[in-house]
Length: 296
Image (cartoon, rainbow, N blue to C red; front, top):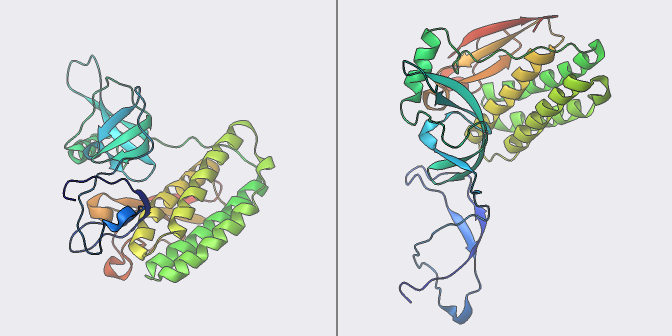
């Protein structure tokens, strides 16, 4: 029996980490022929994923990444430069493989990236006025009809309800308000936007739907807050691209969210009320940008 191998299929992965062991439980199913496996036995397991990286795939260490979720940022070495230099670049993440991530787009094989000290480089970029996580390239604004802008304003209003639930540490209210996002999205008439505007809206729409779905599947408020950060990314992108019909809204930033990684959100009020910490650090953060009606 010792050192004997078995193959099983994972049927469930607990989304929550054990606070003491920092490990997550999994459930694997196997046909226990002969009854060799007994309750309370310990096993040493190796997990293999069905999807393998292609020969042309690029993988990078987790330590090279800034941001979170599907969209992430790396710093790429500028080639043929007299002095060492790095540029910020967004990449699209694939599957995580241990301490590495598969890159779906944004990097080419052979390019050199920063794998340690990315926060220091990002801070230096910010101080020198270059693009950084605190100062990302501005989204190109696109003109749309007033009717379309009214419809996506309803999406922003639904988002505010979700945000306010997290501000109050009210996980049930935040999740219940996700239905308002679904309702408002269903009323957006995509035929009102054409060409570049249509393509951009479809990109943002997919992002909102994906992150809303993940937030709806969250089992606890801290998990929901992680997905809310990416929902905020897409709502901010919507606001900066098309504008919304609110007299004034604010792009807020908390530098301490997610272990000092920092996170943004959109707010309908000037006073800071932090959705990432709630009552624990309610007023932590600052207004980074103000959007007035008719401007982006």
